Amino acid sequence: MPVSSGVHAALVPGGVIGNGRYRLLAKSGTDARSNAELWRARDGQLNRDVALTVLLGDLADGAAAARARRTVERAMHAASFTHPGVSRVIDVLTPGTGIRPDEGILGMVVAEWTQGTDLMDLIAEGPLPAGAATRLLEPLGAAIEGAHHAGLVLGADHPQRIRVTSDGRLRLAFPGPRPDAIARDDVKGLGAILYLLLTGRWALPGGPGEVPVAPTGPDGSVVAPNALHPYLPHELSSVAVRSLEDTSVGGIRTSAAILQVLNQIAAEEAETSLIPAVSSGDDDEQVVWTTQRPVQDKQQKKKLWISVGVLAVATLAVIVWLSVQIVGFFSDEPSRGGGPTVVINQPGSNGQSAPAPAPAGPVQPGQIGVYDVTNQPDNANQASRAVDNNASTFWRTDNYFQQFPTLKPGIGLMASFAEPVRLASVTITSPSEKTHVQIRVASSLDSPLEETKIIGEGDLSNGQTQIQLSEHEPTGHVLIWITQLTNTGGGKNQSEIREILYTRAQ
Image (cartoon, rainbow, N blue to C red; front, side):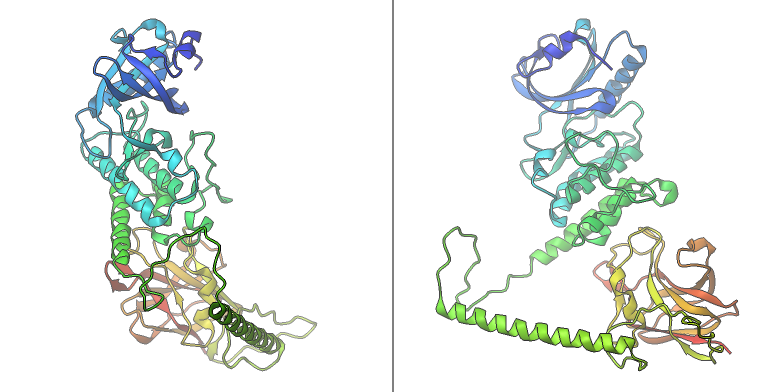
């Protein structure tokens, strides 16, 4: 909404607004969704710095004036809420009560000033480590959870409204929720801020123009942070994405769920930090950064040449191993050890007739992959280890702090066969006791879960577990679907599959 030229003249550093009481010092940002500017100002009467959320507009625009009044009213209600994660509302102003009608300002929220730095400055040099992000975000998450219990909406859904305190906490520095904002918007805001800390990208509409927009997939959903930075914990990445999703398709509904994950990851980070660093020598020297030119040490150079020689031998060994694997791949002899085989058989090719139906017994899938309904598959590059006839290799789920179906309904391995088969049983080798699995048949690799059919299920034991299957039509696709993970202690849940044996029925 355009405003009068007088307003533009006043809203500059050094300008005075609010009946001459507040002198503008520096602009912190703009929230275009509510036509608001965020300023640091000096209260001339009380001689202190304050945070101003200035709602601009034309008084003649009734709809805009009503929206501004609603924002001011909601901010006034929030004045009774106190929390370290939220700047305290000191005053609210409207035209005629602290604001001159000719200032072109529809409303103003005055809050105590938060010492520290802007959130945008914090991420200017790139994303933060997962541990740092959780420690920063926890106080803001706790504030949002407390406000929601009190029936209040904070409006913590814009990055320029957030500041970092001098003791390392994120704080809502510019209160003033939009007139139509609901508690779910605070939850989305918390997820978007987490996404910003982890990726340097903003995942909600109406963000600052200078911040890159979060990438989206073909279905329009936001790409998970660990797809951009694989080193990020799955749990943290998942909670950031699911906070942004519609609750009807599995989105997180409350800030409490986010806060629980933040607390768990922060606790794990603290536990890890207690592990002492490994000394590189008997002198217990500390590693430091230096700009001095390195000293040429003959003994060190000798060690370097030895290391290079060892690396060369290892590289040659890898090349020889790969050559053997390639030869074995194209030979008629089955592999006796080596890596996984993920091959889609095509019977009847090269003009040959299709082979006769195979007798009852073990049947090897042509390919296998991780099946995940949230588009965040666990260790997708390791799926073939579950059918490589080598019990020393394995596919493992990610480590979850919360049991299924809190963050996702389950995770699975989808096997495809060269031709439709009717199975009698599936035998799973695993050390993950009490992992619950379902055996499902599907019409295609990407069949929705609700269109698959359960033909057997059971809890895994430590070792081999054979699951007998009910009668079913021949199928080309079989899903091992995990609905309950093994609790590995310390609030962690994770399951491992070392080998899957599919047995054909008579």
